[in-house]
Length: 290
Image 1 (tube, one colour):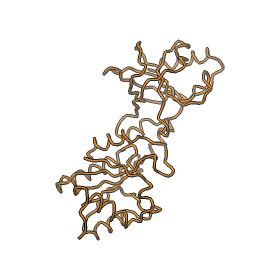
Image 2 (cartoon, helix red, strand yellow):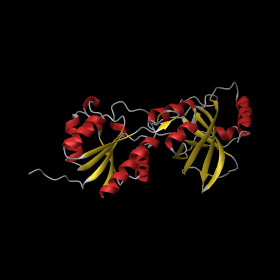
Image 3 (tube, rainbow, N blue to C red):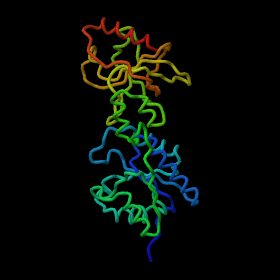
Image 4 (cartoon, one colour):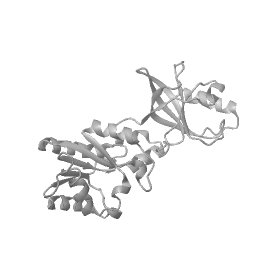
């Protein structure tokens, strides 16, 4: 007699889910609808970002991704080590992972989902294998933005181009980060413009280098701000990328606090100035934009 799955029967949503963008939200939404109709829970099944062989720059880390997936409707989120399943054939993945391990009654995937060794399986394969096993599968349509499917790679490209409106539209939320304020070299203070310094996590997608209009939330209040993303070539020479933000109308010690900075629009590219005095003049011009 076949052993029962160690997991309660459920609907499984399949995807990489980096960014949990509009397309992912539609997939999770469809999975939730199917799960509620069947009286089941919804499990989002994805991969540990660091376990992928050639991971792209991340839009979301593991914790944020799980939070966003649960907010979209997933009752449970499982991150599989890529090495655990990358050599499985599509047949083995469906039989041993989806059915034997998670007792998936319905598998839900996006229109371009690939799986199995060397991505041998596609959505037709998934539907066939699930139905041969007496289960079901659902494939969601692409969600379009400007006539093309929303994707994590398009969002990365929009950020790299400085198109924060496009990135936000595809993400269905503002482009922001929540990071601790670190002690820097106080270069902004030396120039007469005190700033906060935050360092992006390793492996994450970095928006276009340059100066951005931004907002910072402090104790529930929103302050207009300017954020420089890059290496500060005029005053610093260690090559480290950081987020340096001047907050309009705020004075106070913010070191060690986790602050949320939201990008509002790209102003200009980062560049090296001939002197600190020239840099200060440009900062004054930038400040007048907010």
